[in-house]
Amino acid sequence: MTRKDYLALSSALAVNKPNVTLNPQGYAVWLKTVHSVADVLAYDNGRFQRQRFLEACGVGRANDQ
Image (cartoon, rainbow, N blue to C red):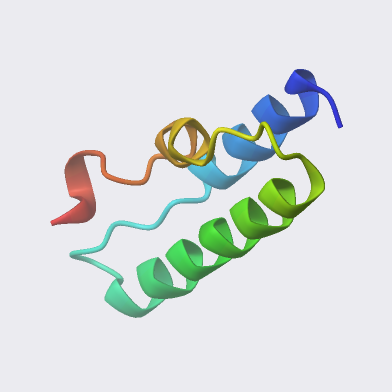
């Protein structure tokens, strides 16, 4: 996979991020999905930057509290 593919995946996951306050169950499922995708990408590419990918997906941003 290329950087372009990683960006497309992170963008797709980011735009589907539910609000944790309004939909805590949906957020939990989304977060598990993001981490599962990151696991696959890390397995596929030893140079994969997991934290950078998670940030691009929106993990750790504003409505996560």
